[in-house]
Length: 310
Image (cartoon, rainbow, N blue to C red; front, side, top):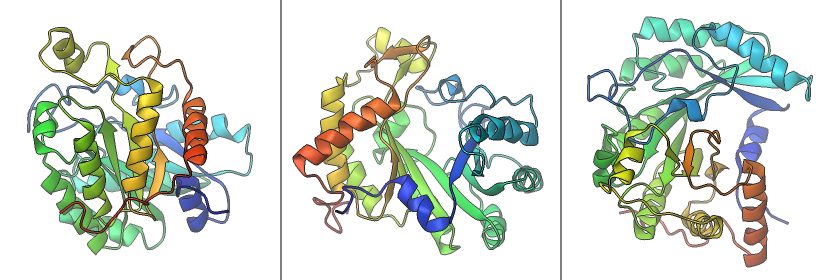
């Protein structure tokens, strides 16, 4: 029986003959919409404390973070290999010489077989992509761009500092060099409707990407967005878990087959999270989603049609 959607585990099995695990790294980067280059304050929803694991601390070297991560995962899978995931903030936002040193330090750690680089689509100069093209000849390299939405008005509202057109350009320049590429989006951003989410799905499906991360907007204490919502300056959709599952299913049906869907939900620390408070672990949510997918006989891409996004 064919699986209802292509997931990230399936994608990795096509690339490696052994189990691999991502280890997140905080290499101490910032972002151009934090340091004043494009703006200050960062994205209005952002608090990086919500997704950095305990071992992922910038005061540790890249090697130290990876070794701590390996120790954490090796207890369950001693034969595991690893992908160094440059996750926190904009991991291409520096001089090429510094970036090369960081990436190559990670790849020198024993059992690290590749890198995933989380970044913004407006922070990938051609010179960097040329270097990564050479690196990809000997190592697994995946670029992961934070697109967040295909709606430019939304991107402006959340102080993202780039446009959807810049995402399209970054993806195309990445693929021209034969590099693997993924996107990250958020469902539930201020002012967006279900129609906006489906339009984003259509536009994503027209791009030559390999992977996609989706998760719900989480309102986090101390963020600009939390202040805006409290003051009534912006409105966000408040999903219950079943409503969000239904939205994910509609999204899956619109996404082009062959794009690996890495996740549908994110879980912030309880002490920081304002909403939504579903009381579910990530795997519990995924189990509920998969049960509904099977019940409804859903297949990835069943409502996808080329040129939907044009």
